[in-house]
Length: 116
Figure (cartoon, rainbow, N blue to C red):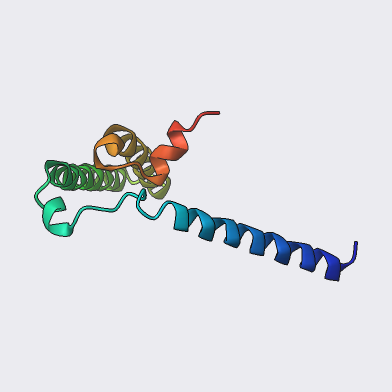
């Protein structure tokens, strides 16, 4: 198979996909879910719950990292950077697993919660 024929096949597949997407968009113009206006979303309890959880999770993360850095600085071992990095990794993994269902799924939580 030559490069020219491969490029032609890829182009035809792209055109087919785009034509099918435009047909779906035309058929389901009314069905698509639209986001509520910002004025309504700003008054929702879900938004403010997510904001509060994000603030609390950020506080916990900074507390754990600062505590790990302070503890490793006091001990004076050569592994202080590694200990701080490991504490940061475990903290962000635990916090995302605990709070991701409230503030929305994120990349770290979806990585840990994916089905194998």
